[in-house]
Length: 355
Ligand code: CP
Image (cartoon, rainbow, N blue to C red; front, side, top):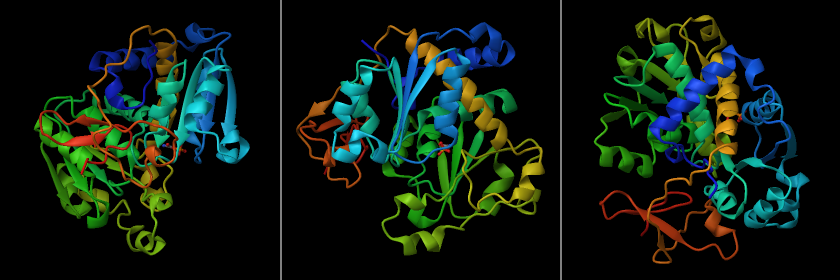
């Protein structure tokens, strides 16, 4: 059995603690790890644009002594000829020991993992999740705040399509005393699959459109970009794209110890004047991403245990979401899971609710 990381829930709290410890050790003793992956090959398949995630994965593998092969963009691979994700998995497994993939469709990374014979890391699947960004976020929070518990976390911007937010909320929900303030325009509110998961665990959260109102109570402010590429209607994007612009003036009501995170890239949502603020952590955050990805590659290449799985219900429901991988992948079985004991069933690929 091979362990892959498709969702942050694929990592237990103990595994996250271990990754944090390994990343810290790599930062202090890089030479100790310089040959840890000698002879191993990472394949990076990026079917959507990326700067940080792809380069940090590749830099991570080089830092471990390994090699990298890469497909930058679907136009440069047989995906452009119509090859399925499943066949891509069979193919790349012949050439690499571990795969990191970004794909525009929700669930594509899960399909890849289910058909690969090597570990797969989800480097972002559509508007669904981005677990390794969350690992970078967690290391940043841990180093800056010294804890994950008892934090009020404001997530601001595009909470509907912002996959980094979905994964971060899932990750932080496991720590006691965490509460969330969801700051977004009405049209970009947090999706129901995240809302239901919070409800099932009894995690407190509130929603607001006002960043200014939320600011004084926050320990963490996690800003996000409005994801233009996910909008079908560009006019709607134009209406919301500048909903939140963080400036030094707006930070006057923030706590001195609050920390500002952003997965980047930013467009307009954080003024460059904020970069000088000692509370701004987003450049450190992207550096930490390299060390957490190094730790994750090490774990997955040495990890014999299967991923924890949830009971699946096959072929009872049909997913209709336009951007779900089920819409294009041939002969992919419909599979749903139940959210706790709620009687609500969600697609395992994109988390749409069964109707
Ligand atoms: N945070 C993040 O995913 O950045 P890239 O899109 O540049 O990889």
